[in-house]
Image (cartoon, rainbow, N blue to C red; front, side, top):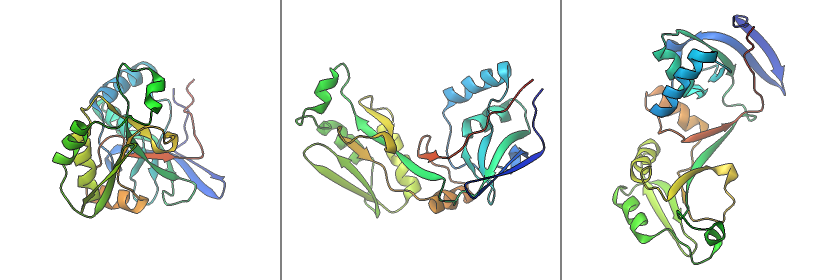
Amino acid sequence: MLVLQDTYVTERRDMRIELKRIRISKLIPHESTIEERVRELIESIRRTGLQEPIIVDSETYMIIDGHHRVEACKRLGITKIPALLVNYLDDDIELRRWLYVYKMRNEPIDKYYQNSMEIPTRIVQKILYNLRPGNVETIIKTIRSTTKIYHDNVNEMYWLLHEAIENIPELSKVPEDQYDGTLPVVYTPIIFKQIVIYYAKMGKVFPPKTTRHIVPYSVSLIRR
C-alpha cells in the first residue's frame, strides 16, 4: 500500500514544497519522451510501483521532472500521480541544458584530448544542411574554429538540432554542468524558465533531454 497523504506541505530553504496526488489530465508537459524509456518504466511500475513523485510547477501545473513516469502511468490507466508542487521560478531550482559532444568511436581516451581533433566537416555540414538562418544562436565549437548558427524560434531550433544530430553516433548528449571543455561540442541554444513555460502553455514540447533541472531536494514514496 502506498503511504501518502492527500496533501503534505513543508518549508525548505524558504521554498514551499507541497506533496499531493494530482490528476494527470491537469498536467502540462514541456518535453517529449523516449519510447524505450517509457516501456521500461511501465514494467517497473507494474513490478514495484512508482518510487518517487514527479515535480510540478504549482502555478501552471507544468511538469518539471517526470515526463516518462507520467506517460507510463497514463498508459497503465492511472489517473492520479504523486507530485511535488513547487515554484518553478524560485532561484533554488536551476535550469541547465544538454550539449552534444564529439567522441570518436573505438579510439583510446587520450586521443580525445589531442588539439588536432575536431568535429569532422561531414558532420558539421550535415547539421548545417538542416538548419535555417534566424536569431536564436547555436554554436558548433571545434578545437580550432567556431561556427555560429541562428534561428528565430528556439523551440523549432531545438527540434531541428534533434533531427539533425540524434542519429549521428559520434555525437552524444552531456549535461551542461558536467561538460569540462576538453571535447569539441555543439552548444544548444540558451534557454530560460520563462521560455519553457511559454511553449508548454502553447502546447509545444521540446525534444527529450532539452532541459536539465537541478532541484535541492528529493522525496521517496514509502511502501508498506
